[in-house]
Image (cartoon, rainbow, N blue to C red; front, side, top):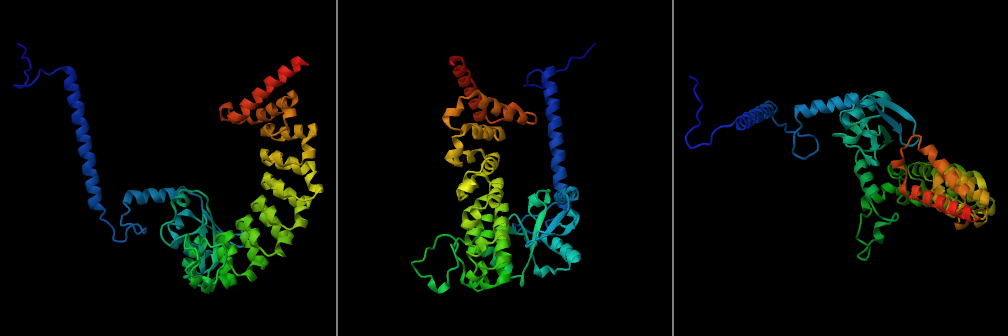
Length: 393
């Protein structure tokens, strides 16, 4: 005789579906209890460290996080330490030896013989702390770290203050009064003396080229200081002395970083085709700062600017914009220039075909979905207009 299963008094009869759901719930609860017990045992096995993570936030770094961090550092490429003034490679530090700022400085001292107290390591426009390195650097981002020499460790705090200041220039402390604007970050009086020192100015402009505005006027006329500044920010050329704005090496260095620095070069260099070419190859819209008809009417310079930025076509000389051949060449070197050709050429079928040919090359490594929608619509619309005009003719 088969015994039938009976449900407990006061409960609904058990069904196969409810039995399966109950088993699944029991398994889930068991897994959760096991996970909780594992976390509790890990927290007891790894007591909090009084030193924390070195970030002064009161938290601790678990053994699991440490192992993951070491694994990421082992897989990351080495850190390249460059001379902040010349950009030359000083040494390469394996990621495993650069667990924090102190170990990185110790590795540099071992390789280059530069004492740790004299090192200031820059990454991402900021000084690296002695504690934990930025996560982007640890994960294998930009691995180039610049090294500048400081005469005293106290300079690190002063350099950070000066880099954060919003003053337009070096203002003597005795000229500040109650009417002086209090907004932003002013240069502190204790930094005023340091900004007259050449070595301090060099360390500052390597970190922030535009801080050239803060150093003493005599240092703004020193070539090495200005070269270090424009190498970091080409637009720092605006604060260089008038003599250095005529210096070809200084100006070409600035244009290599930002072509728009051509605006602050001397009139003679702004009329030099070689100098203008270097500027527009870095930033096409620097064409607007070229001087003299020799540069303004140069087709090579104009096409080089359009190749870099299609919007540079709007800055070309009006005499060139009247030439059909020039405008067609501009569309051939940059299909986006079709947006900026004169209206009389926009319905020309040959212009549309030139733009389509330009984008056809792009489609070889980009799908049509990634192409700029504005360019696609414009090309298609121009093609329809060209077809209609051809039929009318």
